[in-house]
Structure formats: C-alpha cells, structure tokens
Image (tube, rainbow, N blue to C red; front, top):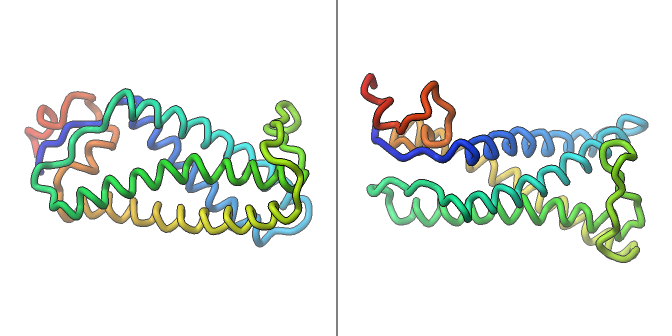
Length: 190
C-alpha cells in the first residue's frame, strides 16, 4: 500500500454527503419516470428540493476545492490516468452545478412554481415562461442526468480499481478512518 496524502475533513464530508444525495437523486429520477398519481408529485417535490441542495453544496464544494486543493495524485500515475482523473472531476463539478440549474430553468420555462421543502421557500423563475424552451430543457436535463449516472458509475469503478487492484492509496485518501492522521502514520500495521 502506497502512502498518499488525505483529503481534508471538510472535503471528505462534502464528498460523501453529496455522493449519497446524488445517488438518491438518480434513483428518485428513475422512480419519477415510472410513477403516476400523488406519489409522482411527492417525488417531484423531493427531487426539486434535493436538487437545489446539491446545487448549493456543489458551490460550497467548488469553493472548498479552490481554497484547499486536493492532495496530489501518486507520482507513478500513468499520464492517461492523470488526464482521466482531472477531466472526470471537472465534468462532475460541471454536472453537479449545471444539472440543477437546467432543472430550475426547465421549471421556470414551464411556468411551474418552484417551492422547496413544502411551501416554505419559493424560488424565483430564472427563465421566462416558454413551453418550447421547457421541452428542450427537459430533454437536456434527462440527457445530463444519464451522463451524470454514467460518470458516477465510472467514478465508483475507478475508486474500486484504485482500492482493490492498484492499492495506491487514492481511495483511502477520501475514506474516513479511525484516525485523522496521515496515512503514512496509520499504515504501519498494513
């Protein structure tokens, strides 16, 4: 097992909270597509609220990442893996921000009210009412959701590859451990 510097605690917390939220959103989206009746409207309300929460957390996470850069990748990483890691993280951040904005824009263009958490917060429309734009944004939202789903699957596969095959410490750098000391101090028993 190679020693790799860990992500900061705020970075790990944001990562895992958002991972759960994004997986939940993808499942909610699938269930929305196959549900009718009052259950559909409850799923839509949940999807909308969690989507806006993801947008807010993604902005916080981006600020955190710019303020506290991630640990460097292992020096023996092949160049193609470094490019893939950087490109996939950029795309993940883009999708975590753009996908909720497209959803918000889609609801705005459809003329739908955008309440969050029941009726306690009502978001303003960010686009004018336009049924044609609503239809286009709905298609874009669906396409981006599939792209995010594929990227999440690739991210999970890459994490497992690093943890189980390469055993290069990359997965461990994002995992919570008993001690928050650097891996080099914890791996003496490995």
